[in-house]
Image (tube, rainbow, N blue to C red):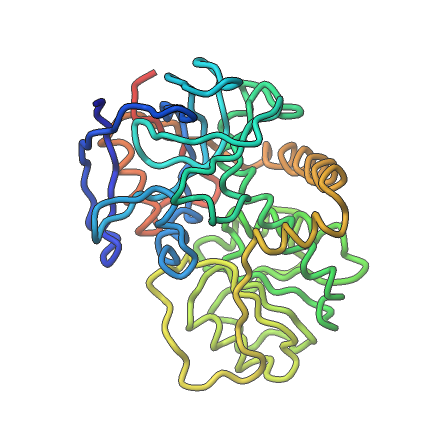
Length: 361
């Protein structure tokens, strides 16, 4: 038996955390053990926690009753293998626990990587179960590890929301309102939508504290602070809500009424500001789930075209982020917990991204 160090979160109170050392069983035939090296942490991971039960995020990496292991995207190295074709020392990018290591059961092994079919994950979305060899990722370099871990998954969500809206002709709207416009998924979405300025206007909904940051970017045509929603122009609009704030949603619905053509619920950056409205004029919110949109996109385009288009758009977005993104690298248990609390309490700035590691490098 070996020991695994886990960062665990109380599922009913995200402010309660602990570090736990648990025994990890010996590998069985068909399994590999991966040591978690570096991973990104952002408000997107808080969304995983808030929607963990509804969208099964807690099921990816099981924990003791009442506790959860938050999924993160990052890099891990194979340290032990009982699988042909997955050798020790191979480095992968994918969905990881905030732990020192974890066990996977690879299937569909190829030059690009593998799919984890561990029993508790086999029925979960393949979008999260794919592990890519870093030496097989197009355009990938060691220097791009941090931005890749932080932004690549969030960019893909933004790409898919853009696809979803375009596929539905923007529900007849001429304006896309993006709430929590400074979040990194929002920035990816706005970057994609900026290419469609002949079709829609892209409007940022944000806090006064983040207004300056959002205005400096060349991806939003207008910026509206949350307190000014009640006086913003009324136009046929779609709301993409990454905030999860009922106050923001209520204000948009009351201002636009029947001119709100669709309400896309896509995130929970304001994770404590949810709740149920007393009444909500206009369309009911509909939850956006990236794996479903991704599957439809692949069915329409084919896997090769999907990968080529996302790769090209990603490279363009990555180049653009060099103008505003600052990475904060932190290592060790105390540093990881401090970064978690910064993001949980909304203390991190929108131009910052955390890249974390358990071990000192």
